[in-house]
Length: 414
Image 1 (cartoon, rainbow, N blue to C red):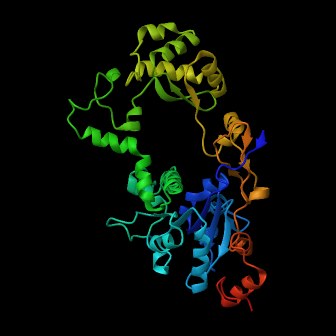
Image 2: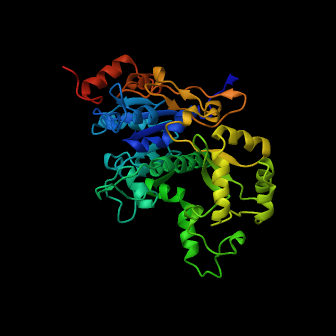
């Protein structure tokens, strides 16, 4: 496998970011884009946020800012603003991951920057977006999970409410939605010569990711003779979306002899394969089911049979059976043990902590016959200031030193 020319090697992004929304450009850096993270002299305090902290720096920083270059500029100074505009002049995208209008207050908003570069694509990503009654509310990542309905409050044994373990939807959804829009903006700008301004709320992305449940509720608000359940359920409505899986039998989680597996024989053909594969054709004869989407809803007699059947073999035995007998059965992993799964090992490249500060999952898309360049380690504050000024803007040593004297890179050390 040969190393490929990075797909986004000719893309330059100027990023003004704080905390988790920096995820918007992580995959761009993975794909070879030059992402220049402009930090204040104090730096992005993401390096200190959340656990785990690895040798003094957070996993969140190692992951979200890998492959990026850090340059320090005091944007309250005229010199800092001028350098920022020079960086934007030959860039494709400016990313503002803070409250909408933060850069505009410094004279570096979209209207200011498009005068420097008419093709610039400007995107702001914030908590709740640039409009609406929540626009100015401060927030953190889990807020978008609670706002969108993706997280349900739980209670402990003493009756206190707490945040349960859950997938972080809001901070994970926004980078993919926003990233797609960024590329669309760049493609159009290169074709037409005109950039654009866009904005995205992480809350919006969280709701968009959970479209199936939200849209199912909207559908069920319509009359029952218009919006029904499945044919296999005699058109009776189940609870919304995945909540309706609880009553399933042929599509359900079962305990194996050493763990759990997910059984998914909702199609009649798969169900028949399963029954014949385990030598129990009478189960199919008794409960043949419908052709499609039949979960044998509420059939406790069958569920009891399947409970005993699955418990008699190991999870790996069932996965082997799945391949040999053409019956959908999946492993049930956890975020802790998935790294031991053979499919994970075969598919995922792990960026090692020796080079990257933390063990991290590499970009998951495979370019056949090619291998993506490995992203660099997440930068320290201002690590690439001189490199960027020299290589991107062509500044010489004397000019850099002169700028240093002005304090544009922060207060000069005594």
